[in-house]
Image 1 (cartoon, helix red, strand yellow):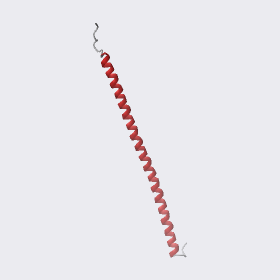
Image 2: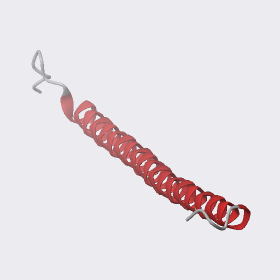
Image 3: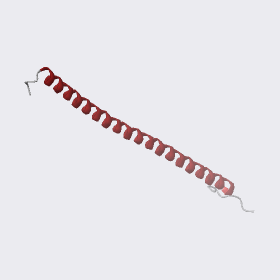
Image 4: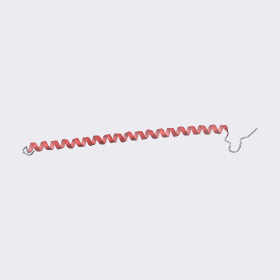
Length: 83
């Protein structure tokens, strides 16, 4: 009967190492999946923040335009000879 050679890990230990490697690979895939999921959420938040910024800028510009028109109407109403 031939025994294991020095440095030989044996079939049971090899199966265990392969199973651990597969488990680690799956854990890495899961971490990558979670990381990509978080990246996707962050990108969506940045996109929403960008959209909100545009909407606020448009609202601000519209508000300034409305105020300017109201001011001009008041000036024409108060001082009709000034145009």
